[in-house]
Image (cartoon, rainbow, N blue to C red; front, side):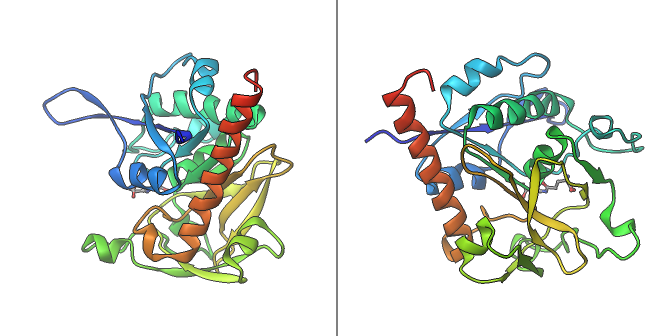
Length: 253
Ligand SMILES: N[C@@H](CCC(=O)NCCCC(=O)O)C(=O)O
């Protein structure tokens, strides 16, 4: 049985004294495999990417985390001096998000990917959550990888929501490695989880035709050891398999 193809959009980075490379962290590739998919890396093609053809090629999309920030003009904010951006990734992922949701292609967003889905659909971000009055510092604590990705704070799930159902409980502990966060949630999104300071930590797409969930934390990190991460990946993988089966039965889907 062939696996559903899970497209993973790349970052485009200048590697010092070298040239541009298109990259995805290996843990995201492994998580796509863990979801039962065949990972397919999609280069950050930039302006006017062939969206329809890309969507014809995949059964699901995983929008990953990255140290880079979305360029603020995409959500109507002023640029930030010294900001680390990736305009070609933005130019690829933002239209891809919109088209994938419209086409009913399953999507999972993680960290930067979560922020991309919110921005693509009309939401906005805080440039520095830790500078917003009343908000906690959600950035990684530094140290070893184990320390950086350690569980950092609880999230509470929206009653009766997707994550509440997947977790089978109303709260869970998550890791936290982001400086930015949701300021306004796009109108077509509904919050699925909140941090204790009120920050939206997960959302789904209202009336989505397929699985469409995004989380601000990192379920891909050592997902085998975390029941919630396994449940998220399993649900995403099942949706990608269903999409593949539907495409096989009705090739125009
Ligand atoms: N730059 C944004 C997004 C943060 C993010 O995606 N971090 C991931 C770091 C590396 C990884 O684990 O993939 C922000 O700071 O909010």
